[in-house]
Amino acid sequence: MPVKLPFVLARRFVAAESLEGTLPVLRQLCAEGLYVTVDRLGEYVHDRQQALATRDAYLGLIDVLANERDAGRLRDANVSLKLSSLGQKIDEAFCLDNLHQLLEAARPRDVFIRLDMEGSDLTESTLRIFEQVYPDYPDHVGPVLQAYLKRTARDIARMCELKARVRLCKGAYKEPPEIAYQDMPTIRARFIEYMQRLLLEGRYPGIATHDDVLIEATKRFAAEHQIGSDRFEFQMLYGIRPETQRELVRQGYRMRVYVPYGTEWLPYFYRRLRERKENVWFVVKNLFRR
Ligand code: FAD
Image (cartoon, rainbow, N blue to C red; front, top):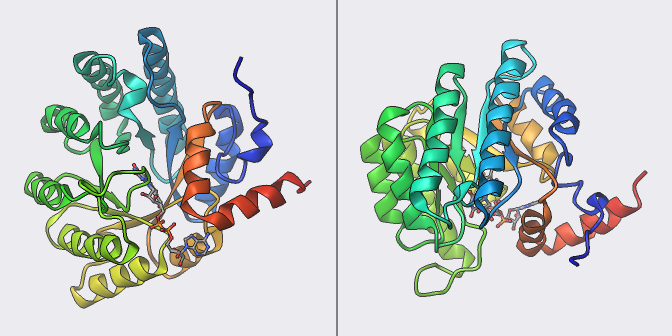
């Protein structure tokens, strides 16, 4: 039987194991001027019933977030979703149908669904599914593109052509050198190039990074090209650089915090630890926090 690690380990990066426990976190972030996108943790689902349960949980989440926004407790309603949790690995048509049902619920409530980007085994399929739903829901769905993938130059051009709302990030999965840049200077250079193109030719991009080099490059480029702070947003993960998140809000930028919740937190937690050795230290300190 697999060992269940205690949630206390993950609480720096994961709001709570339940949606109920997550709501006070969301309200507090919004009260401090931050926007949120809420992710119900789960990925690589291989069982249809489990994928349907995920779909139903997201239907509930969409409803709750729209109600919270309408009651003035959130600035807007955004969710982040991994298609592999909706059955993408089982059958693409089944996953598409599940996503379609979510978008049918999201559109009338004006909830935006961000399709997180996962490992490279799913990139092509995720963008294919996105392009299938996008014409019917252009204001309510958007993909994520990863600067480390060599194919991304092409995908950025395509998303600019479609005027799709893109989140740009470096990329969090271990990918081979044939398809992904491995060194930080190249990944940063690609990120900056894509950020500039999205700001000039895209629609309301999300610039998702904790990296000061990239944040400063974005601010500078926006200022030089008179791109107002209402035409893009910065995005960071819950629990990472919280002071910087608030500082950017004070400077007049939009900042959206990615808030994950749920019991399936282990893969997400490992990715955060792998990214930065300091995160391991934060977790250890957290264990002794009251
Ligand atoms: P890093 O590469 O971790 O750090 C670079 C530099 O930033 C550091 O050298 C340091 O100068 C500074 N820095 C970073 N953290 C700190 C800190 N705690 N304190 C002080 N300085 C710090 N990846 C995907 O593959 N798919 C997705 O769908 C996806 N969605 C994301 C959504 C959001 C909102 C965010 C923020 C990230 C997402 N990611 C996703 C993860 C992303 O791809 C990166 O793995 C992750 O953000 C780490 O890269 P980074 O640019 O933030 O900075």
